[in-house]
Amino acid sequence: MGYNSTRFGRAFCVRYLILSDIHSNLEAYESCLGLASGLYEAVLCLGDLVGYGPDPNAIVEAVHPAAEVIIRGNHDKACSGITDAADFNPLARAATQWTRDQLTPENLARLRNLTEGPVKVDGFELVHGSPRDEDEYIIERLDALPAIEDASSPVVFFGHTHVQGGFVMEPGHKLEPIYAEHSGDGCVLVLSLKASSRYLINPGSVGQPRDRDWRAAFAILDSQKRRVEYYRTGYDVRATQAKMEKARLPEPLIARLQFGR
Ligand code: ZN
Image 1: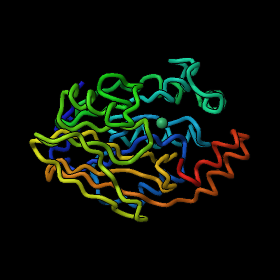
Image 2: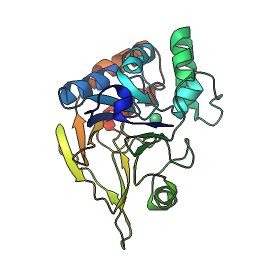
Image 3: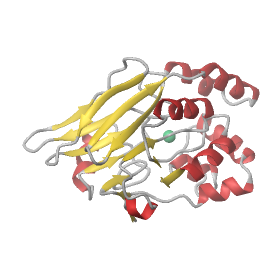
Image 4: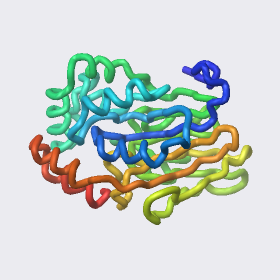
């Protein structure tokens, strides 16, 4: 499926807020929107709106109308009954069951109807896992190499691993990881996209980062300047954890939020 800005009725829509792996974390989501305020014209989401966190309905109701495109993630599929979560670990499965019980029929239907990646927007490709397989994890160079070669666009945005950064392949060079510094709140890296290079870009996870930084992560794509800005922003993690305790979600899922892993 392909989209371009004129289809959104905004011919000059050039700055996209790119969110992934929000995982029912309302405090983290609101912190991202606060930092990004005024810096974007449209929202693109790479999947996993729900699962793990305490606010599945609030997140679906906030993000669904706000985003131009939402790719479905493996947790969206499991929580809405498209898949059965059999391949999830016991903690993720418990959170999936809790999430299913919480979701309203309307929000279950919204999740069930999310788009399968890849989706193209303005020539950029959006996926949850990888261009080859929506559920595949791109963690190491070995995973990234076939993914970058298979992609139908030179620039792919992916999520699923909850690790901000990605990979770049310049002509005549090896594939290299992209590291975003963990330097606190605000813009942590600006990446200028070269026309001759190929990229896999992970904005990081809004609601459950796993790159040893607890701050919510996101990216902004400036499609006209061909530039990606990576951001981190702190949020009230204690408030999210308190909601999870009240909901009796599994303790390790509560603890991991403050460590970013
Ligand atoms: Zn996820």
